[in-house]
Length: 438
Image 1 (cartoon, one colour):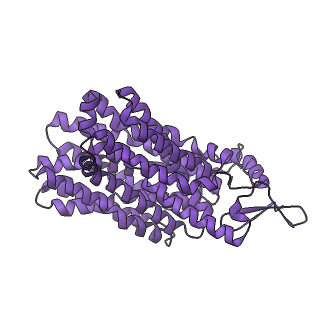
Image 2 (cartoon, rainbow, N blue to C red):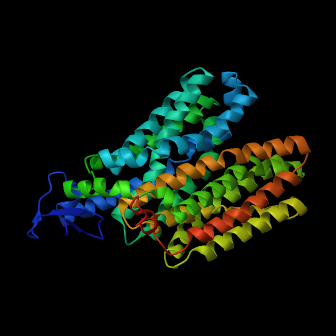
Image 3 (cartoon, one colour):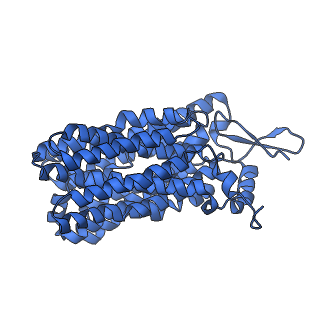
């Protein structure tokens, strides 16, 4: 029995009665009530995706740029500062699980809008709370908004642009990389321009987050489905046991290991160069080069990935770049520093590839939501120990040999998991089985 009529181009649905005639849906979003309104809403979603992506990392990278000043201002111990660097993946894992349930109840647009409000509020209040505990709590509020938005971006792309998953994921990933590198690069100059106050330097990013609220506000009432689709989703949801899907597990491991590599790179690569004799300013510039590589490649890689039946070759190519980059860091860190920075920047583009595969490994919006939440939450949990372990190995060994060996070793299972996750299949086929196994 057909109870829904879906538009693949807009990702919207209409209720259909038993005689086959379309019926108006009182819960239908304004975007589905006419071509002009639909086109307007689609453009608004594009703007919202770009602005949201720009805000998904500045809360982290702007703090990294001013961490020493924040520690001095709040009297923060080194151990607490280390804890602060581990909070982002922990929050992403814990709060990301909530995103699919919130999206089913309120609609993905409303949840992302609330996420942008949470980011704005957290970034605005955390510089002025005056205590380490308050700073951590305000940071967690901002990270909660980032976590739910992280999970729901692939869902929104799948729903609104089902025939352009690659290009829209590329646009989103490129904006995310741009926001990440921009916050790292300009936070210190902006702070100096505002009088040298670290509070002002951190608060300025709340303004960008506030701007991102605007395009989502008109879409708050867009639940993304009429009553018939919501009923069908409730009936089908228990049958989709995401943990039964080998593809979901492979994608979660791939996501977690690539996140581990990215956090290690962001946290330690500049120090590796400095310890090899590279001046501090040059080391920071090398890290910026690594981060900037993600801007153009984050747009190109998803577009290429969606044109291939199997994304394994891209996974292997990115992994080989990482292996060569780590080998260079071990044998000639200063001599070939620029080449290693570029290669590791290419390798870190596994992140937009993982996001693209989330959209490709599920057929339905509900499937994408569950897969995105599972892969990102599980993956971020897996990524937490990596940067801490690198620090421990560096401290106890007195050099970078063991840490680089660890980074290299982690790339092997990352490549294997990515090849498995890149196979042409969907989690619905693997996980949507009855309890009796049929």
